[in-house]
Image 1: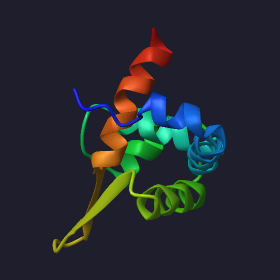
Image 2: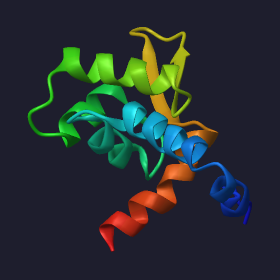
Image 3: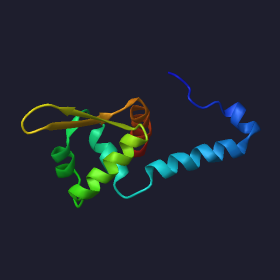
Length: 107
């Protein structure tokens, strides 16, 4: 398993550690980001599948939050040239790293 965080070096500069934590919190802040990520934990999903799995989310909000997650490298969006157009979302490499965190949250 690859260790992404070197605690010894962070200990020397706690300000860098706090900046990294704040950046992560800013990326994941909001009512809908974690439920969207939880929906994708088992693999690729289409927009409507995600929308159906998350009670109370509107299509507009789902679209906005997915754009944010994509912009931050957590989710990838694949568009297929079909009629109608098919769009699938899945975790990017960075998003897959969150799976362990989400598993720990469930436990």
